[in-house]
Amino acid sequence: MVSLISRRGLLLLPVFLLAGCNTVVMNPSGDIASQQGRLIVVSTLLMLLVIVPVIALTIWFAWRYRKNNTAARYEPDWDHSTQLELVIWGAPLLIIIALGLLTWISTHTLDPYRPLSRLDADRPIPADTKTLTVEVVALDWKWLFIYPEQGIATVNELAAPVDVPIRFKITSSTIMNSFFIPALAGQIYAMPGMQTSLNAVINRPGEFDGFSANYSGAGFSDMRFKFHGLTQENFDKWVQARKAAGGHLNRPDYLQLEKPSEKEPVRSYASVDQDLYHAILNRCIEPGQMCMDQMMGGHKMVEQHHE
Image: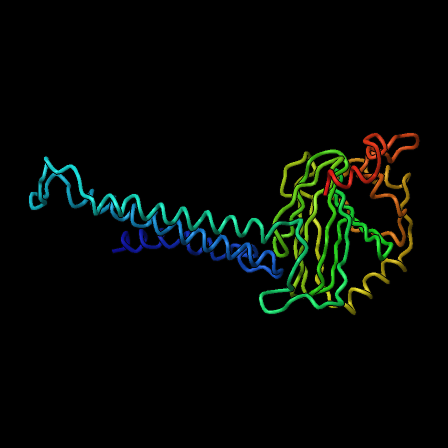
């Protein structure tokens, strides 16, 4: 009896262990991440329509036609059934078509470069809403966020107002990284000399985790930051607090910040050189360096290439 209870307890152990998992990917606070979560659920259910019957029939056939079951019908000359062929090939084919359509539609709808068309499933974007632009730079091993319209910059701390579309412009200083806030949207790669984009919106206030989802060296595991979803009033206060804290981020300071370091604390700059992100993207921070867009024949050409 004790042994039976122990075996059942072991079977339930994974359930208890999984109960402690953070399900932020399946229960996010941003509309883009919510749509991606639903896509995962629908895709999984569609695939289970094939997987579950196959596993169940495999077990049933093994039990039904076991050696000592003499009651099972033995038909060595049976070789074809049109009805079975239609089910075996038709059902997976229909599911593959459904998955293909779902993937095609979602790929276009959730394109990270595509500007948002709604705040969530029930609310379009009001006509007078202004998108918040944030320039993201992946450093070794910390994150630099530049707010060009607010004129501030932060390290390892990000904030945005709730229900305001955010456009991230993302690049890297030296090595490939991955910008990922699970509660907000899917991960986007950050690459030196290139710019990727992500459009997203946070729908609920709160503090969420952000990190690099791509291994990038010794300090990778501490390359984390907090993303604050704030009301517009609290976001304005957050910006004013960063301005009041003082500090200016210019090119010489950036060259110091860019040097590899681990477990960097949160810091902020009240002002930042207006062309700093352009210089980082085009790899011309140091004096005398020619920018990539100049080498390629003009800024317009680089914008077309990266956008």
